[in-house]
Image 1 (cartoon, rainbow, N blue to C red):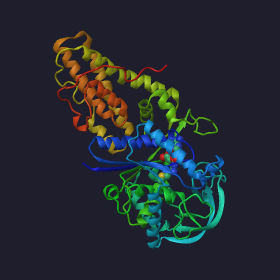
Image 2: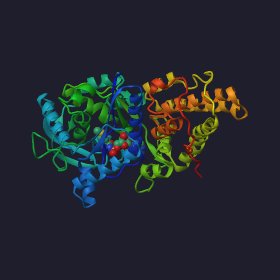
Image 3: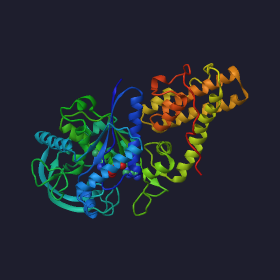
Image 4: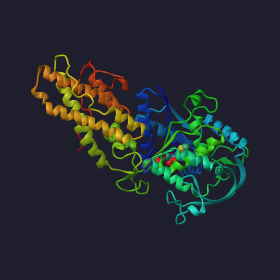
Length: 483
Ligand code: MSP
């Protein structure tokens, strides 16, 4: 049994969560559930990023205090994660006392390492991305990441000696810190330019943690936010910190890899702490072929999708539609066709047909292990080890189709006695094993299947053919056709 620490980014609470936030969190949840299934001791962290000028501005536009806004919106994230069955162990908020204390303590440590000095920042700032943009990075005068307007700032600031750590950062990345390689290469290319020291305080932003060495400054929101990964473990002396740090994987969207693979490692190096093992970058969702935006009005609300189509259908779609590292497109049409085509036709129908016959059968269900190996357990494990959820779900559905084919080929509706028992045995054992592998992806569906089979709480150790000991109840369909 090992330990496994997985994190999501902490989300800005200027608004309610959308499909992009749901995606990062569902991906992290699947890793957490998988590692629990294989017996690891798991800590799964998520939370909200609540300071900074962007939140301050958003609150004032809504005629609220920042505190009112962050309390309200962080609650929306919690409700969303409840709806999407996110099995997090801790929800960190950067306005929590212990977090603010950690940030101050950490800054003191970095100060003692001689890595903070006073200077003057002159350049640009992208408020929606909360990032500094240098003159040479501007694209047509706009932010190179999001294409939006930037503000010019010139103010006194405290700097962190990021440049000092360049060689060590390069070597961490070359040693596999970032997955996949294309994102690693992007960061390596960016590091070919000069790596400048980082402005870590803002004089003109009041909604932030007070900089401990100069009360006129607040801590730059990213310097504050990244520390959530250790404040949540009660750094420096907490039991959780000793047990779980360094993180096994930080799941992040591709646009924030820089912060997690350059700035964060340098902060950790300065405080003499081990680096996270992996930063996994995922691609972005467009909606109906367009970039998601409030002005277009195509922002997908995961709550609405889950209510309309079911939580597990939505989770399944997010993983089955594209490999993690690629971009993908969401449309209700595509979601519907996956429900009708795969969840209903492949999975739900199989379970319904097998259980209908099994329920009626009144002998002992036993037989020869003809379908053993129908699902490629080893390759599924490898897929998880390579962070490839897309490959894992495809392997599971390959298995499901094999059972379907077996069931059709055997024509059990024409059989009785031992011959029928044999087919039912093979199909039921396969379905039982399918439920185990579906647990990380579709936890509710996996539970429903187990309930229908009259068993519960299976782990990966049960994923092999044995005696069928369940008691079958067909019940309702797992999925119904959507018109
Ligand atoms: N607060 C920072 C993270 C700090 S972590 C120390 C932040 N927050 S965020 O609210 O903007 O959202 C972060 C996550 O949402 C990222 O992983 C990002 O990729 C994801 N998404 C936001 N929009 C997205 C899409 N349209 N598609 C996929 N994911 C995207 O950044």
